[in-house]
Amino acid sequence: MNAINRLTAVISLASLLPLSALAAETGTVEVLHWWTSGGEAKAVETLKEQVKKDGFVWKDNAVAGGGGAAAMTVLKTRAISGNPPAAAQIKGPDIQDWGALGLLTDLDDVAKANNWDALLPAKVADIMKYDGNYVAVPVNIHRVNWLWINPQVFQKAGAKVPTTLDEFFVAADQLKAAGFVPLAHGGQPWQDSTVFEDLVLSILGPKGYHAAFVELDEKTLTSDKMVEVFTTLKRVGTYMDANRAGRDWNIAAAEVINGKAGMQIMGDWAKSEWTAAGKVAGKDYECVPFPGTQGSFAYNIDSLAMFKLKKEEDIKAQADLAKIALEPAFQTVFNQNKGSLPVRQDMDMSAFDACTQKSAVDFKDAEKGDGLQPSMAHNMATTLAVQGAIFDVVTNFLNNPSADPTKATAQLVSAIKSAK
Ligand code: BGC
Image (cartoon, rainbow, N blue to C red; front, side, top):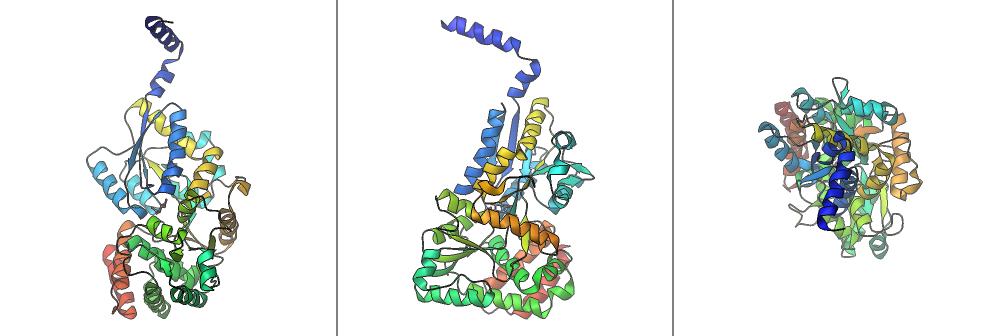
């Protein structure tokens, strides 16, 4: 076939396709997210591939910075200038704020057609709705209260996997004595507060955690137990290395993976780095609930909120993204790479590793009582303003060796009050 004939064949084939299909092929979906580490990028790739397979164009807007603070700044600037992306990683109570601004689109057609109400836990569905309508789609459930362990390092140090805070300090001392960094950590506010919230969950228990971070109850925030949390945080800080300032969480994870450090306190996105490095859960590494938080599950649900768009073909691309996000095939491969639990409740968990299977069991158990709690450090428990106030107090405290734990609790209350 010569070039002219080939062109004629393509044109006549195109004329057989309905107009809507032609238009759909050009639809673009721009997604703003902060999944930029090696493991996270692999996970997001699975979403990109599916969007492309469905005939749409994926426009990547990846803003580096764990925890998402930088991504949120970019999103605000875009929204203020009247040019938001089609979808953005927005979580928890923040979805309500964006909904109240009138910027989010109604996804109820996709939700009804794909039975979201039946697939999602009611608690999760509620977070995704503004004024009774779906405006966001969840992709996973992360658990924040994990401790990641390199068993080879533990063995060399003669240390035992800790289940209590006392055992944690015993193991940390043994790791230190054997010449390892006991606790890999990145000195960034959200990482400092990830450790802080785990300590609150461990020392105050799930009810106290709820009173502190959801109810922002003054008595709880200034209680003796909270003083104990700050005192313990200071002690935990002495097992982190001195050069941690600004270090990204995945670099800290790599220190445990490479055997330089023994432990990391981090949510299960840390597992994405172990998986990307070809390591096997239960063999090359251990995941255990943060000491003293067995039975509790601090959840962090990643979701994509969808903005109002003008172009018909882009709206189709956006609806396709929303649909894909909850399809079983995507839920499996995305979450295998991301380290999280599928958010759909009807999934076959045999395709997941030991850590995720444990997480699924723990989620169900925690759901029965008070154990299931929203993560403060990961935007699930309170507004970004209050969260920012807590971050400041915690990070200043951790970086100041002479800071006083009792004073820190008073600072916590006044910072929260002025942020409310
Ligand atoms: C997000 C995760 C992400 C992690 C590190 C968390 O707040 O929920 O999806 O992997 O931050 O960036």
